[in-house]
Image (tube, rainbow, N blue to C red; front, side, top):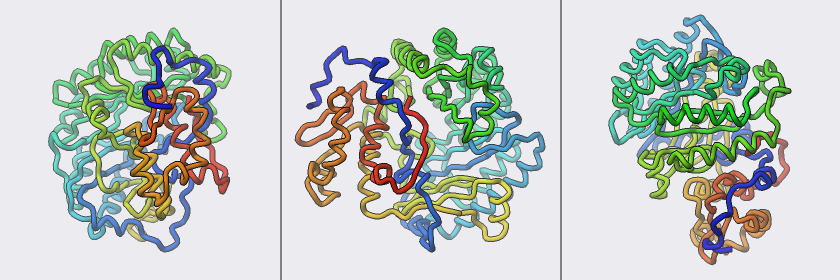
Length: 460
């Protein structure tokens, strides 16, 4: 099937969504984090000496209240002292990297959680000052410094602090505006609160404001979701992430507080997704892939058009870097040689930092086949096209020969008009963007080797 074989009218359908909606990795890394194991003496962070640019991720796990849907690594507390002592350990961990990472510009900085704005303004300054002692922080228009925030607790004055510290992108966790849905997930937030913060952030010069939304939540239905999207569109965020709720109470304790009978059925979720795609498209938002939408003028959309999108553990980004250093409990780092991840539990993380300066517990040393498939999966997910000639050069064999089994796995996607190929390229069609995870999975050697049993969220 060639690129031209994606006729008009081949749109998303309930049948198509149902057939490709099974569990599948999100491929924020390859190999995926569930494959990580003790490093056995290898030190992939040694490659940090040879980089020219760096991305930083800082995990702040604290929240004031529990959201029942949440599957993040979090600590629910009203005791601010926990955050203060955690920050001391985090900055101590940063110091461990002082002689391990080249002094190069930090092109991307992301504070995630939890709720990073749980930190006081003073501790946010303390955090950035401490990071600046080790890493080359150069805030400006040519870098992306972003932070996740809970609109229920974020103060307008904190926006002033964040801008002073160089943050230029704000992500607000909305999830849903319907009062019944909010009560069912224990996250009550009014559109007025979000509007006030959105307007205040724009007035202070935040270049991009993103909303996180979820479909498939308890008590949610097609009508309530459409109403939420109408309210969201009135506020006109630059980017929208529309995630599918994965109800996995056997894995995530907080989700056991949700009545499973109130969670929409698979067919209802599919109807919600179809309606949301149409509603956002009619409002002018461009679908970038996976769960992400952006206004045409947003830098992320421009990067997608230019073939410059990148992907890391925070999702799509427009600021490529040679390596990623993750700080904090459960944070993951990356270099050209592999991955390394910190201990998950707060107490164990703090103890490890105090004893040895770092909390690395597992990771992955990349081999040549890993690097080949890592590049290939990134090309598909970020550029929606794969150069067969370049892939063959990296593989050291003809593309159709080396990836014979993978092409057999992809055959249904070709037949369904989700992928196309010709002599030189393999690519994702317009409607195939929703299923790019499925295409990437065909090239995942570990997923098909049955070496381990892993559980993943559903595509839809």
